[in-house]
Structure formats: structure tokens, C-alpha cells
Image 1 (cartoon, rainbow, N blue to C red):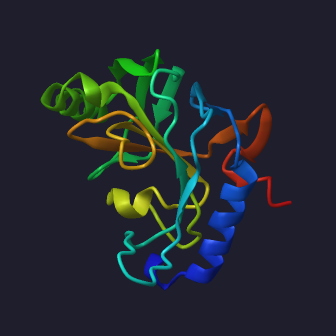
Image 2 (cartoon, rainbow, N blue to C red):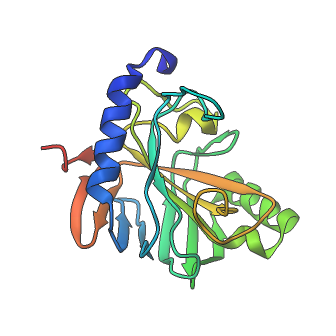
Length: 203
């Protein structure tokens, strides 16, 4: 069970990853399914969700396990193929999201695309904006259709659109929609840190 994970270990892993990523200025995500998305991280701070909740006014969610950042809002360019899930929805067909100037301009791919189109229509243009790049760090988390757990799965990354003003960004929106991507390759400042879901930076 993901809640029985060793949170001291997750905290150490997540914090070490954030430290490795500190000061990074660009990210590129690619996958075998066709993802090729670039974004700027310049001046933004990596954060961690570790599950270690101690002291007054400390909050988080469980299960925990991610390292994340708010990319520069107008910087995302390219294609993101979300193949695992959106909030409340495990995907049977990948969803292709095209980004230009940081905004989703085109969506295709079955029920997941329909869900996304409706959400954006409901929440307005601010919901199209790149909001977050997150890296799952919980080795016991498993995909189950609950985004709080799904985005924590080790070997995945997630990209969100919508609000990010509460995580160090500038976009204010009435929704925040995470899409989880399996077996990603993540380059930071031109160096591959995760390859097909495998964390190379730890080696």
C-alpha cells in the first residue's frame, strides 16, 4: 500500500532530486508515444511533497511523493501525450495535447480528450495554461484513477494545466488538471536525468 511507504526514504529521495534540479532553466519531456514538450523553468523553485508533516501550519497530502515546479507560463512548446490518467479517469486511449506559447491549442484522443475539452470550456482560457511539471517519487504508489495517488507513482511524471499561483507560478485559474505520463524521458538543461521512467541521476 502506498500509505505504508517509507516516508523518510521518500523525503530523502525527493529532496535529493530537488537539490539536483535546483537552479535549472529548461526541461524537455519525450516518450515513445510521441511526447516532445519543452518548457522554461528559469527563476522558478523546485518543491517537494514528502509526507513528513510536522509542526504547526504544515500541510500536504497523502500518499505523498513528488518533486515539482511551476514552469514559466508562456514557455511550453510541443506535444504532450498523456497515457496514464487525468483526475478520476484511467485512460484507455492516450490523449495528445499540443502546446504553443504555454497554452493548450489542440486536444485529441477519445474520452480523455472529451473530458479535457469540457473542463477547459467550463473553466475558461486560464485553464489552458501550463501549470506544473511534477516527478513521482513514491515507489509503492500504483495507478488507480485517483490523481492524488497516481501523480506520485515512481517512474512517471505529470504535467498540469490551470492554476499554479499556489506553487510558485503566476496563473490564476479555477481548476488545476494533472495528466500522468508513463515511462518518460526527462532532460533538464540538456542532460537526461530520467530515461524511459528510470532515474539515472541517482546512479
